[in-house]
Image (cartoon, rainbow, N blue to C red; front, side):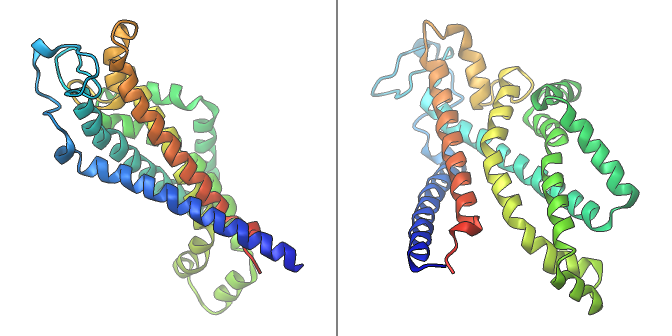
Length: 283
């Protein structure tokens, strides 16, 4: 490899690292806002005052007030706890669950592998949100049921990635050497397979945060997620959609929160993917 190529790779790697740090800090800031939202809100997000109903944005109320006189800025902040934290729990469930299923199926194969892959085929055969709507309708409303509904139809992508990576890694010489040295299946999976497949899984999970947030907000918007008076961005947009033309801040405020959060996590996912790309590593 020429010196010029090595120099270009170093420059690209440093640029990618800076992007990763920048968007990682922004994502961390969002998480801190979600965790400490209860201390950051200027007003009680659930206190009703009909005399302040539907006030436009002002110095006292940065995002205006809603139909019941509740401060929209406070509700958007406290809504971050529901929207962001439930999204992260959902991504954690489907990434861990799907990865475990994919690794076990890829390593052991057999009938269990065939059955689980056919189940994943069924899940992937339907449009994700439509399938989630059906499951959520059966379970009833609430954020917990919305998370379960999306988890039921979202794990196959991780199982597919984990299975394909496992099939490739288990045939590598170092995995074969570990088996010849007397290593059992658990040792080979934990010491050799998982460390080598975590990169693609991590990238998929980070890129999935924005998608899962949109789908959770969509379920809430349709009345199958967070229920009133819970402050959740999708539910807040649903409550104000009938007044979009007359009082647009009721929809725009939570919409902007969703947009900013999704963009930050998508850009973070892109940075993670580029950073883990072996073409960016200098030799």
